[in-house]
Length: 262
Image (cartoon, rainbow, N blue to C red; front, top):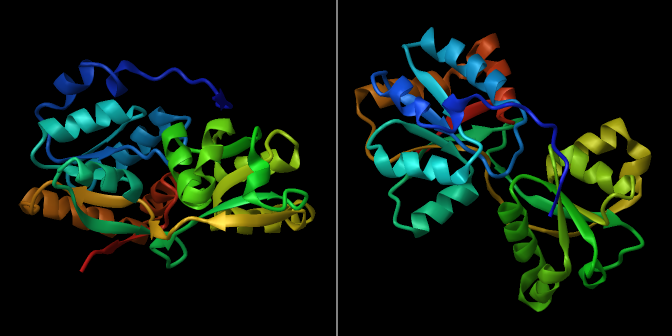
C-alpha cells in the first residue's frame, strides 16, 4: 500500500490511556471515527467541537484515528453518541454490536451517496485494471471493500493485482489519475462534481467504470434508547447547522447538517 499523507504529531490524549482518566468524570461524549476519510489534524477537529459542545451543554468530542481503539470504546461504554460511517456501522452490527442510527448526516439535502470508480477513457473496462494503482481517501480496508462491490464476483480476482494509493480527500484521488499517479480513483459522486468545477478539462478526460450501492453519509448512533442526557446531546447535534460555528464544524466532517431517523 502506498500512502500520501502529511505527518502530524497526535497528542497522547487521542491514543493512550491519558484519554480515559481525562474523560472519566464528564458528561456525555461524542466519539468519532470514519474510515471513509483521512483527517489530518485531529487537534483542530477536537478543539473546534469541544469549544462548541462545552458551550451547548457541557459535552465533549473525542476523535479516533484507530478503528481498534474506537471499537474498544464502544465495547466498554453503555451510553454516549458514536459518529461513524454507515459501512462501519453495518460491520459492527454483523458482530452483534447493537448500534442504532439516531441521526444521518446531510450534504446539499442528500442523506445518501454512492462511490464511483473513475478512469481515463483509454481504460475501457474493469478487466484492464490488473496490475494498476487505484487511488482513494479512507482506510485501505474500506477502499478494498468498495472496489470489491463495484467489480462484482466476475472480476473479484483482480483485487489481488491492484495496489491502493491512500490520499487525503476524494478530489486528491481523482486528480491523481489526471497526474498519472494512479490509473483509477474511488470517490463520491460529489468529488467528480467538484472536479468538473475546478478543472473541467481533466473532468472531460475521465469516465466511470462502475458504481457502488447507495449508502448513508456519516451517521450518529447509540447503543440503546437514549437517556435524557444523550437525547439532549443528539438535539444539540441536530441543530448545529443553525449556528455559524456549528455549520463550520460540520464541514470538517464532510456534511452540512443532520436529519433525524424516523
